[in-house]
Length: 444
Image (cartoon, rainbow, N blue to C red):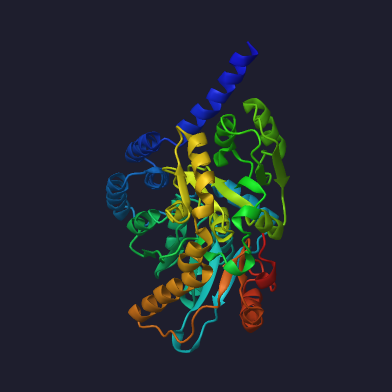
């Protein structure tokens, strides 16, 4: 009887995960919302449903059709105020805790003759802080090109709509998945997406000293918070079919109500035969040390944002395994030099195969050539320079080099000193939004 209950609980976890990540169900939900928007007599409710339907839609054909339908209806209701985001209550919680921006950085000071500065604002809760705290957002957006960095894919399109309603120029959104760039730009003609991902494309190789493969003490490492979307259960299920002497380490942190104890309970539910090391809330340097000491790094999420941990693993020289078909930005960096895609039907076999050939891969070298913060900075500079030229605006200075660890940070301390006067000016004008020490305290 106990075995039946255990099997039923495991099956329930998997079924819930499959339903949550079903593309067909997401599209069906989107169609239902679109239909409800047409039937709604309230213009605000109709807009909310239509935009949410667009956000939920998965196939390009569907969101293109929904976009056209939404534009036709909104054209007849141009004076309707943008609807509130369903996430507003969560954003207000961040605002209540702290009204000033975090995870944001000034990359360029405004110059003469209308040359714009560049301000990067990472993650949607900070978008809300800026939207809520700046009375004339358009005036700020005419002084600074604001880079709106997403945390998830799909991002919050109702929040995007609210920002678009408060501004008049081009809006630069850093997507968390390459495929979402086309969707974002189809949402509104003023949205432009630079050819870099939010967060994950800004890892600095200087922090990583990969160990020789033969000296690495961990076979499989998973760096992921303890929330269900990270899908630790699939690893635990696979480990039951793998050698008991494998050295496995989990590094994570509490997310909402999910704690390390939930993970330990799940390991007991799956009767994992290995002695798994569970580490929580480690300093970033300690995380890096473990990454550089691991043969294989594993990310099993089926949907999230760009996933910085995946790119960090590449720079650490670990072979990277990610779920086949995952809607995660960093999955595009899996190739014959860096790792392998893990099948949901033979996870254990795929993991063992990756572990066996991990010594032959060159993830660090590939990442340094293709996706370091230095490479990404060149792409972003080129994009913004070309957009400035297209708008007949001057561009005489490039962006200050920066990296993500584990928030945007200047690569050279001299740039913070050089730009401190700009932070001081924004703090003087908008003290409730910009702290005077934002350049050194943007950690949360």
